[in-house]
Each structure stands twice: as C-alpha cells, then as structure tokens.
Length: 88
Image 1 (spheres, helix red, strand yellow):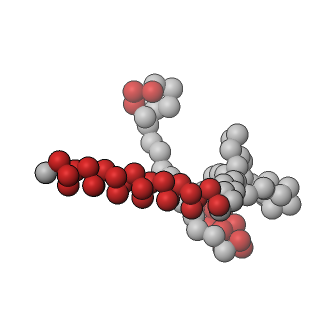
Image 2: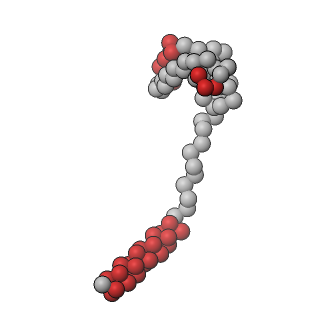
Image 3: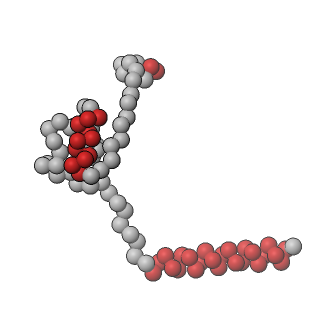
C-alpha cells in the first residue's frame, strides 16, 4: 500500500515538473482587454457611465447599433426604488 502511494506521489510530482517545463518554453499569451471605443463609433444616444460598455436608453436603440456592428444585445431590466438599497 505504501509503495503504491509513493509511486503515485512520485508520478504526480514528475507530471507537475514536466508541465511546468512545457509552460516555461512557450511565451505567455497576452490577456484580452476591452476594445478601444472610437469616438465616431459611440453615438450621442449612448452613455458609458464610467465603463467601456455602451449603454442605451431603450432596447430598440441598442438593437439598431448592434445590428450595424453585427453584435449581440444584452438587455438588463432593473426595477425598484433606487434611493433605498433594500428595495432594489
């Protein structure tokens, strides 16, 4: 039983070393970042609210812009009394 556990631990240690060596040879891939938003791309109808995402007032406006850019639309509907955080 001890021999099996010892061989398993040695095998896992060797596999970890080989995986680390393989990763060290390959240069790391750059992390994807947000797309730069060009001024001519952002319309006067949308707002950014401190993010890189274009927010629109209505789903119709968002759909029109998304169709031009061949992108998807994510609709988020919030309701509540925003002055009181417990009711949102």
